[in-house]
Length: 119
Image (cartoon, rainbow, N blue to C red; front, top):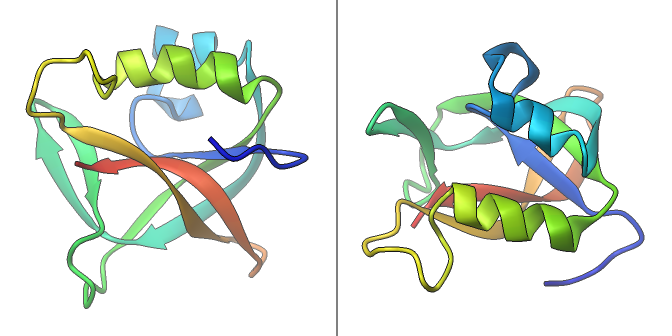
């Protein structure tokens, strides 16, 4: 994983503030809310969970979410990779994979963030 001075995470499902999940609360031990943002991707659902599909390069759909600045990216991703079942030891096929991707902030800026997308 690349370490910058600050790593960011984009969330668009169960980790958002308004989802009200215990996982969101657990994430706050490692991250703080930074801004709202969006990506162009197709949103699909797998077992009741949203999955951003970046493979459709002409997609005009927009997925809105939240960006979090990370206090401890290594610890957060150890926990989240397990939660999202995308560890090398997780059962196949994986639903998610974690990548860095540019996200559009509502302010108009673009920020490289970590995001879980369709595997």
